[in-house]
Image (cartoon, rainbow, N blue to C red; front, side, top):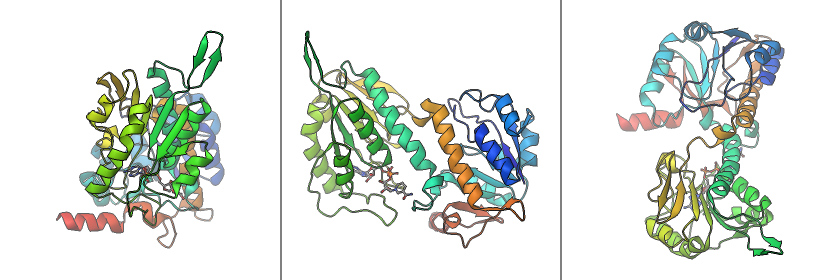
Length: 380
Ligand code: NAD
C-alpha cells in the first residue's frame, strides 16, 4: 500500500502529520511511504531524515496525491485535492465533518474513505489514537506559557532579602484534558490554582494536582456516555457566572477551556467580570476560535479589555510543533497499525471494529457515519 504525506498548506500550520521515526515503523509494517519535499522544514525534520527512514521524497504534489492509496495529513483537504484522489483512497485528517458539508460531499462522490481524527471515539482502547487529547494536552501547557509571558508578575512565591512576592492566583475554567494540563503546568511554576468544571467527577482529579476545586451548586449537570459535559441551561450558566465572579476578580490569570461537544462554547467570562480584575491580569481563551468562553476575545488575537490582556491564540499545540507532530504522528501510526492486514499489506476498513465506525465519515461512495447522516437528513 502506498502512503503519501503532502505538505500542510494552511498558513501558520507548522506541525507535520508524520515524523521520520513513524516512517520507519510504517515501512516495517510493509507500506511504501512518499512525502512531499520540505514537509518537516518548519517543525525541525529534514528531507534527509525522512529519506533515511525509508521515505521517497518528491516535489510533485499533484502526482503524489494521485498516486496515494492512503493520504495522511493534519488539516482537511481542499476541494481541489479531492479531485486528484484515486477512487478508494483512504484519507485521514481532521475534517470538521459537522460543518464541512461540501467537502464531505466531494469526498463521498469521489469514492474516498475519509477518516476524521476528531471523531475517534473516546474509549480506553482508542486513547493511543486520540489526537484531540494529545493536542489538547500540549495546548494546556502552551496556554500557561502564554499567560506567563504576558503577566507582569512571576508565578511562584519568592522570599528574598528584597521582600516577599506572593504566588500568582490562577483560575482554570474547564478541567478536561487541556484544563488539567494547564492546572499541572501552573502548579509546577508555583502558582496558587483554583479550577471549576461542570462534571463533578473532575473535582478529585483537580485536587490530586494540588489545586482547589471551586464548589458551585448548579443542580443536575452530569456527562454523556462519551465523558463529555452536557450543555447547561441558561439559568445554570447565570448561576455559574455569579459564583465565579469573585474568584475571577482575585485572579492574576484566568484560563478558559470549557467546551460542549458539537455545540458553541458557553460565554462564561463577561466584560463586566474582566473590568473587575486588576489591570495587567491575563486571560487565555482556548475557545476563542469557535466563539469564545470570554466576551470580546478575538480569534488568534491578543487584545486589551479594561487593562486586562485577553489572549485568543489559535492552534496552540502548533506553537510546540515538534512535540505536537510527534504525538499526532504516533496517533496516526496506532490507528494504521490497529487496522493493518499483514496478509493483504493494506489498511482494512472493517465496520465490525469498535473504533472505525465512529470515525469513518465516507466510504464506497456514501456517507456512512450515523450522526453525520442524521444531521444531513435534518438539513435537507
Ligand atoms: P472538552 O474539550 O469537550 O471540554 C473541556 C472541558 O470543559 C470538559 O472537562 C467539560 O466538562 C468542561 N465544561 C463544559 N462546560 C463547562 C462549563 N460551563 N463550565 C466549566 N467547564 C465546562 O473535553 P475534553 O477535555 O476533550 O474531554 C473531556 C473528558 O472526556 C475527559 O476529561 C475524559 O473524561 C473524557 N476523555 C476520555 C478519553 C478516553 O477515554 N479515550 C479521552 C479524552 C477524554
